[in-house]
Image 1 (cartoon, one colour):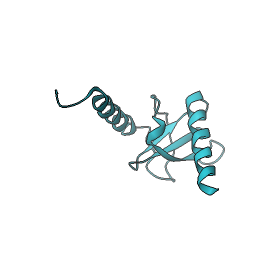
Image 2 (cartoon, helix red, strand yellow):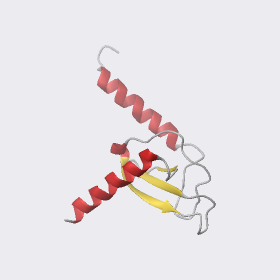
Image 3 (cartoon, rainbow, N blue to C red):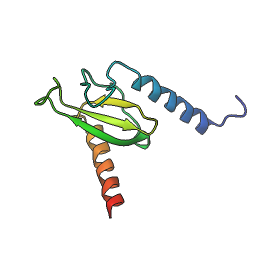
Image 4 (tube, rainbow, N blue to C red):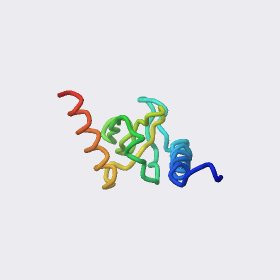
Amino acid sequence: MAGIGSKSLVLISLVGLLALLLCSTSEAQSNQDCCLSYTKARLPRWALKGYTEQLASEVCDINAIIFHTRNGLKACVNPKEGWVKKHLLFLSRKLKQMSE
């Protein structure tokens, strides 16, 4: 491992952890599927490209945010979590900047 720097090793570890987390049972496969549980770990903001909101008042049992990642995966998260709210604000600002 002498050729791999500590930053590269950390990045590789984070990407591996993200892939592992997103392959859990809380994954939403399509817009018709419902989130049944939440992903437990925080997702890095840099990995996100968008989101969908799931409402319990519609078809599904729980409120959830479905984060869409840059590599095409989807993860269900609790919309009440502080880090989720911050990530949603970040994505909203990014969208606003793109539309200006």
